Image 1 (cartoon, rainbow, N blue to C red):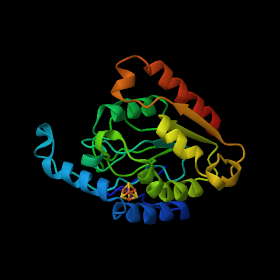
Image 2: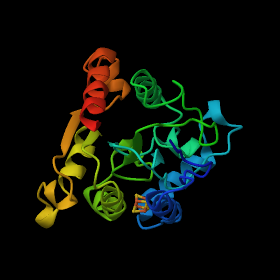
Image 3: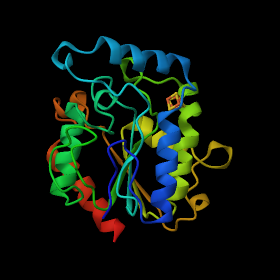
Length: 231
Ligand code: SF4
């Protein structure tokens, strides 16, 4: 088991870990989308009152987790005061609380809480990334922004070409994953992975968890199935 370092780059024994580290450094320097660069940095400057004494990350958020993972997890984008603040995917907001608690219950994380990028949390068997790496206004990246960020996801999917299961969190992530391939069509075989299962879950947003659209029981069933498929 290995995990990300404080800057989100995996510390590495394997070639994949080293490649993920290089990719993470590249991601965190990206300024390809003017609207998102402006927004992520403005949020980091203004801050939410509750986090006034926090130093926001305010940059693109790299993937996080076990470089030897057999489950790839794909979300939408960093939350403005969550991952854009803490510098780790799904960390610092309610969605992340749901996700990491579920990963812990599934024995994919060594603790139920993800606090910030330097807290020592370790994932075992899972790697978390997103379709878009910068916090978008109203959690809504544009189609062009998704396209601009897609090469990063494609590279991660190439690096994890042997994983038998991808878990997508929400429709945006699902479409992003299936959009990768020749002509933009679904193409799992092109990843050199046979068979590949994409498990589509509701996003653990408050909109879904408060309304009961996604319950902990349903979410646990997703991770239980993912673990089963990953073996
Ligand atoms: Fe770069 Fe992706 Fe952020 Fe756009 S969303 S600036 S492509 S990291």
